[in-house]
Length: 356
Image (cartoon, rainbow, N blue to C red; front, side, top):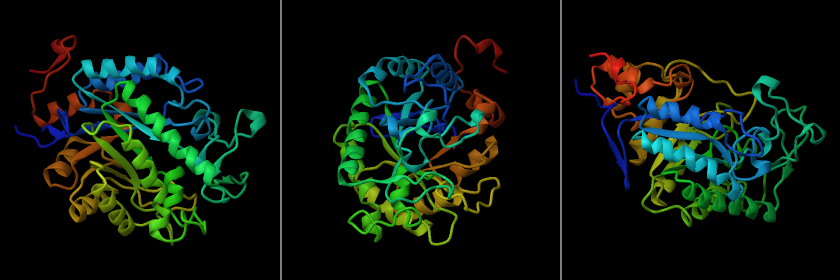
């Protein structure tokens, strides 16, 4: 049986063997930003499981850009060596290693989920947080520090240097995280950005930092390797960032050389109202793809091979990204291939378990 989900996709010099992508998912298992054997096994097992692209969790470009003290980081050259072992293994399994570069902004300095996702004070191992404006995510939290021009330039430089390290570490796809209420998204939305300088107010001003980060990233990232941006298509809140602005931004990003928009939503404000349900975000990816012509990735409660196949076959998106479903089943792509009647290559070590 032919399958669009298992058709290859070439982006610049990289060919993905299928359209199944492992979404970046924080593991809260790093120490001082360093990857561990957990990350090697977690990411490596999804590669042996047949997915075409494996995107590493939000990897902080600076210590203050971490969500939690246990986040991965790439702010030091010392981080590179272990990351190289991860990318090398993923590539050995005929999969493509990707990395998501991130700065958490006002949502930084919280404990790991199993410790309650609580904001950490500095005497609890936390740190000062930064944002476009002195507006907290939760009303009862300490107010973040509004970035000044020097702070903004540091963010841009941090993304630039992190990109250099990412390429040295062997990643073949890079994604800029501008979604889920983290720093770059905070600049995009008027709900978190009340600045009156050139980084606030109009649409052109609110997207400025993302475009400056993009330019810095492109100055280091190979022009032959794919570059993606993850956005939240809507804040799911009145007067916030919306789908039409996402289309407008995506047009600009395409013109500036971004290859694919990874289309998620929400995460900016605690009063968001998200209508959860299967495929609830897919129409955003479809809208951006149809109105701009850029490649898109679809996410959000996509759990079956039939859903994923239909999304690709109907042209609503070019990739399908899996998060929780891939935690439940590391061999997601191998499972989906069997369900769709597609013959794919298994790791030779597992071939005797392949259903004939």
